Length: 98
Image (cartoon, rainbow, N blue to C red; front, side, top):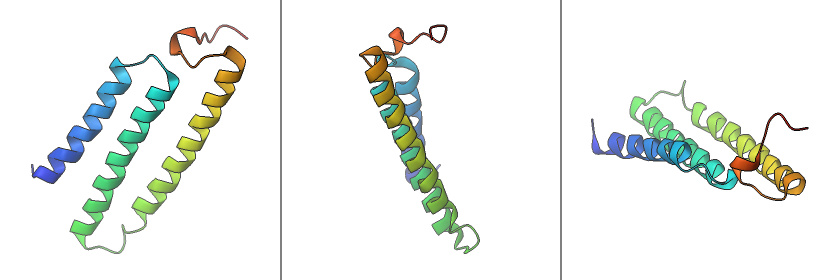
């Protein structure tokens, strides 16, 4: 494993560990998801550069567009949750309540 691959793999794993172990606020969970998406985007971009293939060159931009849509939806959910519940703590969210 090259040092570049190790760096982006460790960045993804750190984001995943932050998502699993530090689940107090919805905003921190969204930031961990964004860190994971950024690590995947950079790794996919470097992979297409190493292949020197024009077939896969549009994949990182498509992935970046989907991660931007995911970030917008996450922020909309954060605002809606903060308005209805008054906080963004994940402990206070109950799926059984209407």
